Image (cartoon, rainbow, N blue to C red):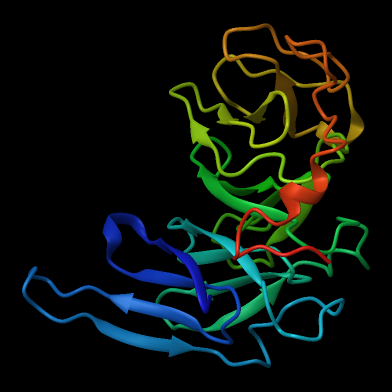
Length: 255
């Protein structure tokens, strides 16, 4: 499990393998013609491609990659890693960005925090989907500046939603709202970036810029996190399933 899938820049001009148990980022530059050979490069080493301090085996580092073509970066989504990792596509420079997840108060969960994500064309930010993590992760690559030169802002948003293997990945609708279909959670995750068509602000202080909420079904009115699902269970109730869920995938592992 050296790499767990990959991510690509716009048009597939560069492909990056997501370091899971391996200590390098894999870069693949496709040839201009189908019969040509790709250029393969290994980036970084174990001094920069790291898992979290809670592990001693250097495994299960990242579970997703999202390209920010506006600013020329690909971001790797932390699973066991303590910080976000990004690569500058033009230079191959790797760097950790944002605070330490636990020390910075962003996330209490150590392992399988987020899996996969997306780039919003509405607010030009990267979002990562909570797998075992309690909250949504957002990366503003521009860092409040217009040229992408400032340090990125890495933060968590939305209410705390406890559970294991809740959601994985998301699909962006035409109005800019993103939906994540549930894995074990009993409701859709609806992500409304600021400025989305038909979007709205919530009254929670941590959601001043982006809304995160659940819907029981795709055509229902938006519901709070404590709203029961159609079968009468609480949306976040994964009791009795946590042990099985923890071992679903060989590329994911619990603490």
